[in-house]
Image (cartoon, rainbow, N blue to C red):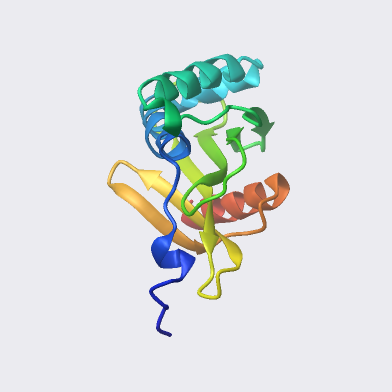
Length: 167
């Protein structure tokens, strides 16, 4: 299928603030101190750090590129073998902006590796909204294919399925 050059798949671009938060700042924290982020989420203190990160990223951008942090939220889930810190950035509008992100650590881990998944906003070739499931690793950004609806329960179910297939 040939994608028209006017398709949003070709022409749309993410907002810098939104992209840098999920794909750089939060990614770096997840890959560097992932289990620590999950521990902070478990005691209900992750929002403080997220607000600081959001504001820090915005402060480095020209004023016209700064976005409101309204809608930014954090959640903690314990699935037995995995513990997760879910971050909902402000609502996405453009391609690659995240609906949801999740830092996944083995249950009880205080240090060590974590995994970082995103449910990204995308477009179909017909310019209809869609989602893509991705994972950031130390090697790069991995597209895992079509994602679920932008719903936390569906997102976490999909991530659990990926984790269990790769275990």
